[in-house]
Amino acid sequence: MGEKKLIIIFVAITALILGGGIFVLSSSSTPAKITASQNAKAEILEKTFDWGNIPYSGGNATKTFTIKNSGTDTLRLSGIKTSCTCTKAQVTIDGKGSPYFSMHPTSSWVGVVAPGKTAELLVIFDPAFHGPTGVGPMERLISVDTNDIQNPKIEFSLKGVVVK
Image (cartoon, rainbow, N blue to C red):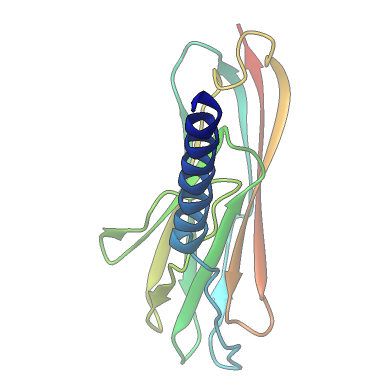
């Protein structure tokens, strides 16, 4: 009788784990697909930034980059990723912020920038994320996919030195 209970419990736990895995996989986003355009033009004046010294206990370091649509067609931004989970990025268009993006998650979010308008890319670096041993030089990359046929992927590079 005890052996039957053990088998039933084992089957129930296995079913719960399997059901949970299916739920998690079905609820994850798929990356957005955007169609390239000859007339969408991503104009970026600044792609690199040096924070210099970043105090370990000084709170997050931030930097905002501007992406302008200098074309005649809508510019679409998607697939935003950072090179480390210590860094997040958010896009703001017409005062509306996107979700925060990081290294691992994929998102179906697409930002739409009208001709002549701009998007702001906020980058947030947490210098304490890696703990006390995470001091020293650092460099992080943020990539943004676009529908600009000349600039299908834009990379922003940030560096600094985390100091105690």
